[in-house]
Length: 57
Image (cartoon, rainbow, N blue to C red; front, side, top):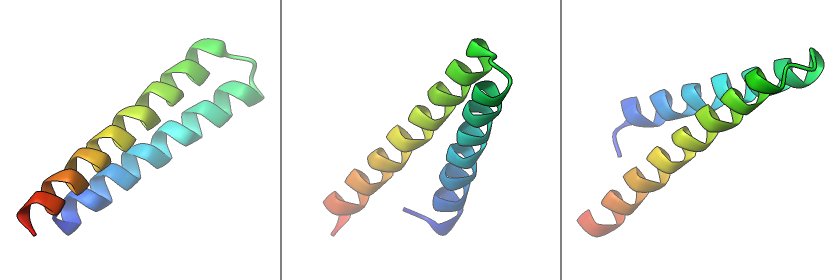
């Protein structure tokens, strides 16, 4: 996995976490759910990149 992908996925995960916490703080369930989805997508992308790296080695 390239360093650019790692940074991109980490930023996307952090963005999702921020949305989730903002949703919790404001009692906005839609924003909270959107944050959880964003965070999950980033985590899945990161797992896929790690799997690709494992097969390359």
